[in-house]
Length: 118
Image 1 (cartoon, rainbow, N blue to C red):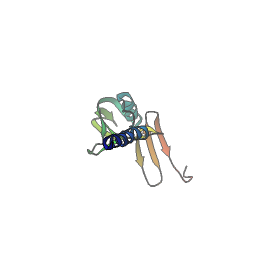
Image 2: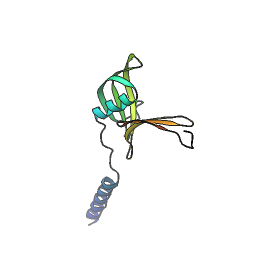
Image 3: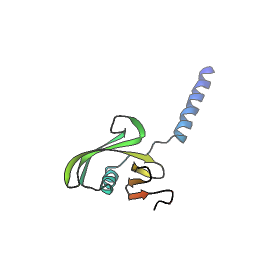
Image 4: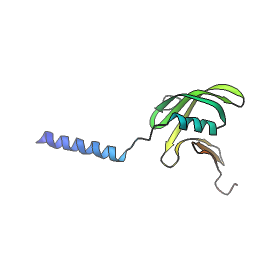
């Protein structure tokens, strides 16, 4: 009886965990290419997506590292760029400064300037 109760508790935890803690969708290579192109990269070739790992080796489901080749400001470079996941933003890259931020995702680039700084 005790084993059955423990099994039911374990099963409830597993079902409850999967219902509330969903993983982000995988970053598709085509979306990664669109994000990089929004960041002014050209001739982008996405070789791999390191899902769940940032460029420094840290792991979390909200990380994806784009590995590839491309041209930036007229020069050929390798690409190793971490992007992040947010439910509202989808996969994105964010560059934050003291009074503004710039966000890139598969839909393009967005400048964010709060506090009436436009």
